[in-house]
Each structure stands twice: as C-alpha cells, then as structure tokens.
Length: 459
Image (cartoon, rainbow, N blue to C red; front, side):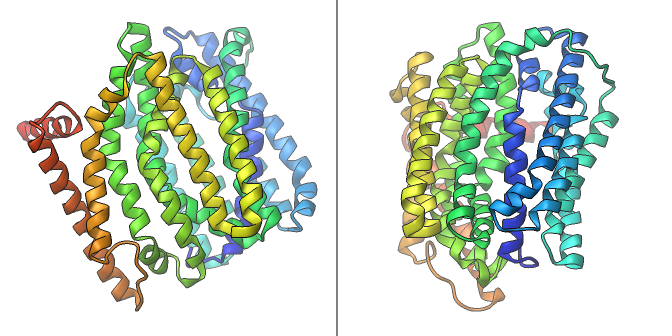
C-alpha cells in the first residue's frame, strides 16, 4: 500500500466488485453440493465442471459488455481495461479442476492448504514487483489474474481428475444450487453495498481506503475463521450423514477458534494507529477508525460465521437466506443514512451494527434448531471473553492501546514490539488463571493443552 495511492486501490476495488457481483449472479454452488453428497459419481463431477465452464463464459461476456457503461457510471475510464482483464480471470477460474473438491470431502486439508496458499504467495510477490515497476493499479490487476492462472495449473497438477463435458446430472444439482444462488445474491448486496455506495457518494480514493481498512480489520476472519470454516463444512456434512450431534461439534469448533480470534480482533483494534502509520503511511490515516471499529467485530465474527457454515452443511438454506436478506437491507439503509454525514466512520458503524445482528441471529438459530442453550455456550466461552476484556483494560489503562503514536518508523516498531507481546502475555495469563480457578473444566483451554501434550509426546 505504501507503493500505491488510495485511488489505485479504489479503481481496482471497483473493478473487482463487478467481477464478484457477476460471479455471485452466476453462482450455482456445485462444489458445496459435491461435498454434501455421500457418494458422488463421475457424472456429478463432469456436470459440475460443465456448469462452471458455462458460467465462466457467461461471466466473461457480461464483464466485457459492462466495461464501458460501468466506467461511465463511475467517471473512471480506467475501469474499461480493468474489467476486460477481469473477464480473463473469470475464464481462468471457470476452467478449474473440480476434482480438487475431493480434498475437502476426504479431510485432506494439507493438500487444499497448498492449493490455496501457493497461488496467494505468487500473487503477493508479483504484485509487489509490479507495484515497484508500474506504480499503478495494474500491479493489483496483474496479481489478481496471476492468482487464477497459478491456481488453475496447480489444480490439474495435484489432482488426476480430467473433465468431460456433459449436463446429464444437472437436475440432481439444481435444488441445492438454486438455494445457494439465492443466498449468494443476498450476500452480494450485503458485502458490496458499502463499496458501491462509497464509490458513488464519496470519491474513488475512499473506496481504496475502505477496502484496505476493512481487509486489515478482517484478518482474523479471512486468515483464521474462513479457512477453518471450509474444514468445518466438511466435518458438519460428515456428521450429518453419521447422525453426530451438530451442536456439540459447533460448540467445540467455535470455542477453539474464538480463543484466537477474540484477542486478535481486539488487538488489531488497539494497535490500528501505529499499524497504519508503519505499514501504510500517513496517507492512509483515515482508515484508523475503520480498523478500530471493524476489528471489534472481527473478534466475535466466528460465532456467526460457523453458524452460517453449520446451517449450510445441513441444507437449511432458507434460514440462511432470511437472515442474510435482513442483514443486507439493514446495512444498506444504514449506509445511505450515515455515509453522507460521517464518511468512512459511518460505513464502519453500519457494517458493525448489521454484522452484530447477523451473529446474534445465527447463535439464536443454533440454540433453537440444534437443542443447545446459552448456558452451555457461556460455560465454554466466558473465560475467553473475560481474558480478552482483561487484555483490553490493561492495554488501555497503561496507555499502550488505542493511542496515537508519534515519531519515526523506529518509534512505531518499538511501540508494536512492546504492545503485541504484552497483550498476548496478559491474555494468556488471564485465561490460564480463570481456567485454573474454575476447576480446569472442559473447554478450549483443555483442548489446547491436550494438543500441545500430544505434539510433545511425539517428539
């Protein structure tokens, strides 16, 4: 971000909005449908690949057709070439090896991790190199296309499946996929309304600031919760076939993840000012309040995210659709009201309010549909919240958290090198103390301790 200007990120973000919008409009969810199938045959895989290919061709044509009108709408002629390049990315995605879904079905997440991580590393390296050379938004677009290209090659290198074109099993995939499409449409409105409205009501540079700020604040979700939910989807689906207790699996997974996301999200909120000054520079200071507010939600987002995953795996997509629609409407209305008066802070408040509603709705739905209670949830999680609260209080009381840091890069590095270990130490010590005083009950602390003991015993 220090090599590019906010307007560069704004142009790239507006382009990717329309790619992602078209992706969701054409979404059919064949991969998730295959994961949920108990014994999918060759015809299902081939039909899924063919549907994805047709979808990709349609998306590319739509993006090419929208290039000029979208550029005119946002008064940004650069968007024409950006959307044409993103049409190429859509075609590359469409040709992907659907056989890779087997790694999710068979819980071979180490192989899926390689498939997801290697292209991302190539993308980051190429974007940095191109940013140094071109100093423009093209660095972001080239990296975006490169990610799809490497992912395409790696998929066929890692898995022996080779597709055949057929639509023989399309009816079998239609029921689940149609609901998936409806949910995706609601998610499209919910997730892209902020960027679209900021681009229209404010200026392109604010789109870039919002994109970077929300991405930084959402790191606990994108790097911890989202990958874990892919694994959890497979586990929830397998548990559904085997008749396992869904609530118990949900509570175990969500508590373990919350042990990391609660301090991570609050920690990002605490160090937002120093982090932005060091990593992005003074040009991006308007993202600080955005990160401070959205980081708070990132700490607790796991409860709603895993609830969403659980209901998806159990095929209760009508419920997911209803919750997402209400959240999307609330977010859009709040954005229209708050953006003109409060700018990016108003956007953060709108997102925070609608996201909290969604999280609470999923927790309540898990309680109702899977016969659990708030008492059980609190019994496994109150120590995590108490330890996180203690960390936040100590950091605020000592003047280390939520403070403006002045000085050069050395001062910023010194501040972060002090705050991050101190916060982690306070959290870990508080959590251990609460767990010990409580009689060392079953929960994420016991699970983590057992995991560490197993790892040590193998050595």
